[in-house]
Length: 165
Image 1 (cartoon, helix red, strand yellow):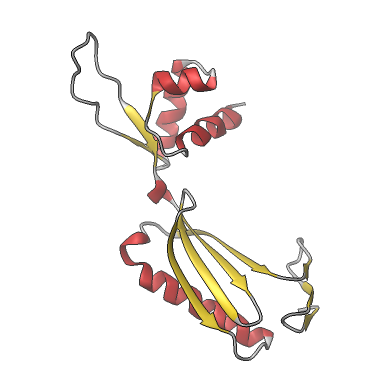
Image 2 (cartoon, rainbow, N blue to C red):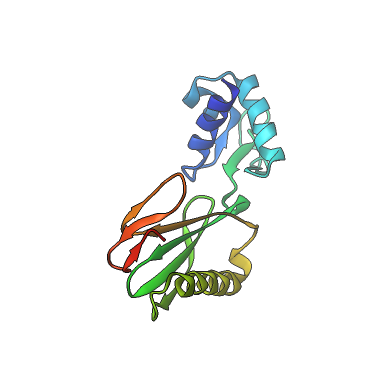
C-alpha cells in the first residue's frame, strides 16, 4: 500500500505544480501525516524538493511549505534505430527533452550499428553538459521489427535487413 501511495504522490508532483502537504492530502485523500512521511522519504531519495516557505501573507498561522518534483533527479536516453539514422534523445526525469543527437547509418551490419549507437550516446552525453545533472538511469532502444521482449533478439527487422540478431 505504501508503494501505491508513494506513486500517487509522485504522480501529483510530476504535473509541474508546487504542492503543499495539505493540498496533496486533499487531492489524494491521504492523511497529512501519511503525506508528510512519504514526502520525507521522497526528499531523502532526491525525487522531491522542499521549497522555502513563502513570505508570510497577511493571514494567521505559519505559511505552508511547498514541494515539487525534482526533474534533475534522473536522466534517460531513448534511442531509435532506423535504416538511415540512429537518433538518441536525452530527457530529464519528467521526460522533457534536453538534448538530441543523430548519426547517419552507413553500414547496416549489426556490430557496426551497435558501435554507432554507442558513439551517438557518447556524443549526446558529452554535448549535454550541465543538463546531465545525474547519471543516466535508463536507456531504451527501439527498432522497427519483431523483437523478443525476453531475450532482446531481433527476429526480423526488414528495414535493417536483420534476421535473428
